[in-house]
Length: 389
Image (cartoon, rainbow, N blue to C red; front, side):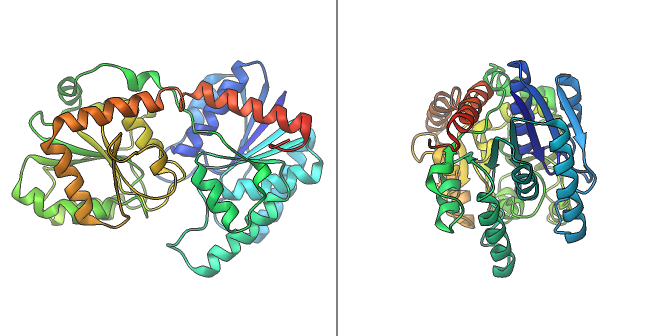
């Protein structure tokens, strides 16, 4: 098979890691694979070194594939994507993210690609932006859904939310969990050894977060929920792994509150180092307001750590109350603090949640499972014309 993936930005992020692992796995299975992407800018890192290091993925940058709505550049991009697709002649075009998904599906449909697939990693419409902007995205996604054969979703919740606003039809959808290389998360390094290696305090209770320091990721909620407790209890610490456009403002808040010694912010770290940082945590907290299915929560569970997450989107599909973690209503600051207190005072419960989470996730979220599921989806479409045939 000749498979072309399209992704808007190859920054360090969940959908990008998913895409690169899909490309690598498909190349390893003997398929010809290309990855088309837009310019990589800003403080959020890049996945391009991983793509180039693999050696079996043809990386193609196209300058007008940008995240922002830009009619002139978007028209140029659609034309350029049509040219790239005609020249490369893929059997499958698989798009990721909203902008690449809309322009890429349109271009592939124009050219008559036999299988046009889109993955919803997270929906572009949500309650935290204007109704007009949401309406534009919903109409664009409805239009694009008529120009693809199948839509993969990383969570059942993404399928249900898309169908609820008229995007696509049920036969187009298939849930394909967002895979990762699970083995590094199964390493049996003690918390003490991880903290010693990373320079973190041995005697602290550390609630950690793996996320870009960006809008809607919930770092302000962590500050608001725990400042009073942290001032009263020097043993309660936060660990923020990641960087982003809000880094300066958030860390400024921490300094202004006098919490520098209790909030550890190593910044952007190489993806290979994420498992070690999670092993240094007592609990992984994910108060994001908008997700598909949060990879950080899965990574915490694979590392046998209990998780606390806002109860939205795909999080409840892995953060199972009283089984693998604790769900909190979005914005419930008291609920966040109470959940941490509960796990801190009951280490046995935290250990049980972590063990159960690892067993739930170790096969379902293995990248090899994802690659197998995608190949089955491609084959179904190529043989029958749509995911449900």
